Amino acid sequence: MAKKKPKQSSGTIALNKRAKHDFHIETKFEAGIALTGWEVKSMRAGMCQLVDSHVFLKNGEAFLLGARIEPLKTASTHVVAEPMRYRKLLLHKRELAKIHQAVNQKGHTCIATAIYWKKHLVKLEICLAKGKKDHDKRATLKEQQGKIEVGRAMRERNK
Image (cartoon, rainbow, N blue to C red; front, side, top):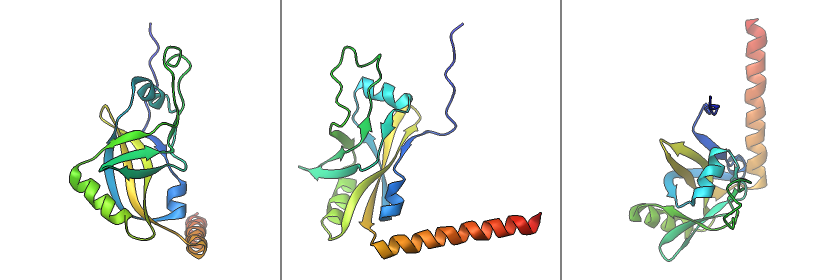
C-alpha cells in the first residue's frame, strides 16, 4: 500500500510574522505567483520562507523579491534551482495601479505577509504598509503583554 501524506490543517504555507511587528498594515491584496514545477513541490513540503521579502514594481508589473523557496533534493537533480529568484506576481491592472500609487507616497511599502493554498493554486497575500517607529513597536508590545495578563487573570478567576 502507498503511504498517504498527512493533510495540513490549514492552507497556509508560510507567514511573515515580522511584518506585523515592523509595519502598520493598511490594505491587503491577493496575488497569484508564477512558479516553476520544483517550487510548487517544495511548497507542498513546506520549504518556503517570507522573512525580509517585499514586492517591487517595474514596468507596470509586480515582482516578489526576498522569498526563499528551498529546492527538494529529489527535484533539484535535473534542474538548476535558484531559491532567491524574482517571481512575477499576477494582479489585475486596477490593483497594480492602486499599489503603485500607494508606494509612491512617502513611508509606504508593499510587503508579502503570507503564502497559502487556494484550492490547487498558490496565492500570496501582499499588503500596503507603513513602517513603525521604535516607540510604536514598544506600545504594541505593551498592549500584547497587557492582553496576556488579563487572559491569565480571567483564567485564574474562573478556576
